Length: 272
Length: 255
Ligand SMILES: Nc1ncnc2c1ncn2[C@@H]1O[C@H](COP(=O)(O)OP(=O)(O)OP(=O)(O)O)[C@@H](O)[C@H]1O
Ligand SMILES: [Mg+2]
Image 1: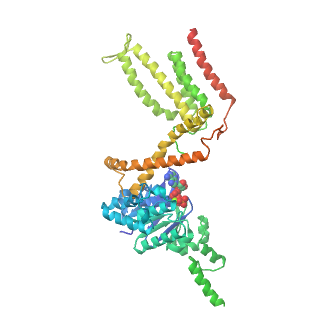
Image 2: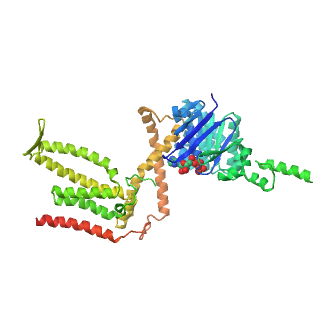
Image 3: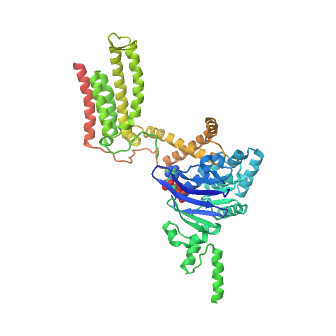
């Protein structure tokens, strides 16, 4: 069975006795998926487990049929890419091109092709003109984009973004949204950890809510954002436009401004 | 912040004693058995140190240390017992090996001294937070720069370990094998050196900026984060320790 990611009753603790993940079972399919949850809910930990950087204490994770316990993170890296929450933890080379080429060079050992992939990825994030720069001379938002590019360059079938929009302005966010959509369009499995609810509502089909190391909610993004009470219990707020609709007394759960506008226009027609 | 230290966080009477007294205790535990070189003195000091470690509930932490020392000292005991130059009185025989009284006594004396010094240091190290120790020393006139260097040395190793962990994760995330056989790990180690050094330099620069922003090299008298705790009994302990050293000297001269 190759159904990309299967997680069964996953438990994990950094320190004995303090379980961070308390029994998570999930199957991921090709729907673009967001994982949301309060600070400390265990989202990053979960991503590192999927990536094979951490190994389950009990339960199992299978990536394209491979149990992460039976392989190394390096071995998994041709199938699954993770963009770290903090780009400073991911970047270690002293120029942008080397950084982005590092992954592809490792998995395909062919310099020319690695270089092309790296340049393509840097093009996507708008950094082709900074090839020779030291990443640490660039801004945090640019470093986050380098981190994204260096995973895109590996062209993996599964891509996990941990907080991709950190430090990004509107343009940066739109660019990242575009990249996520493009990856999904190419048939890749994209998982994104996010705190920006508006972005989640606009971008993802499926949303999973983590709360204190467990899955509190899992469903289509619209279903999930309808559950006001459960979200509140998990410490989360709904997207702005969803709250606006609810405050106005609409029974429909809006996810985007466009939805709301076309609804408002329609009822205007009816009213007037 | 994580530091490389053996400090055991407990609440005990020994923990509450100030670092200067503990330093004086090291001095006393080293000097007195030398001034009065009888086995009895050494044994008494040993008993006191063990009692203090037990009182500080840190005795279990010195067991590994003691076992290493005992192993080393055993070899001294055997060699001195067999071959020391002044050996004349045979004590017992193991097969064809004859152990002599003089050599064994000498070895026991040396061993007790070493153990005493080690245990006295262990009391200081296990029951004093390094930062408290350095703060006290700076209060007593040690230059804050040296105090800072000393405390950062203790932080550097765990910090480097963290950096190595972070960079290794970044590398294996992107396809570089770092796990497995020794050869693989060795090969992974070399590419680590550059980034670790770079990142340490960056951290150092950031830290020095942070220090300067807070006026680290400002002239003038500095205040301290923690109030100096001056219990009356601290003074009592210090004088007691000094007095016992002096008494030992007097005893030695008089006898
Ligand atoms: N290396 C570590 N060692 C020990 N505990 C850790 C470590 N990393 C994270 N934790 C703890 O595990 C819990 C979950 O952390 P995690 O980073 O997975 O949360 P998160 O959902 O990603 O939060 P955020 O939204 O802030 O990124 C937290 O309580 C955190 O303190
Ligand atoms: Mg996180």
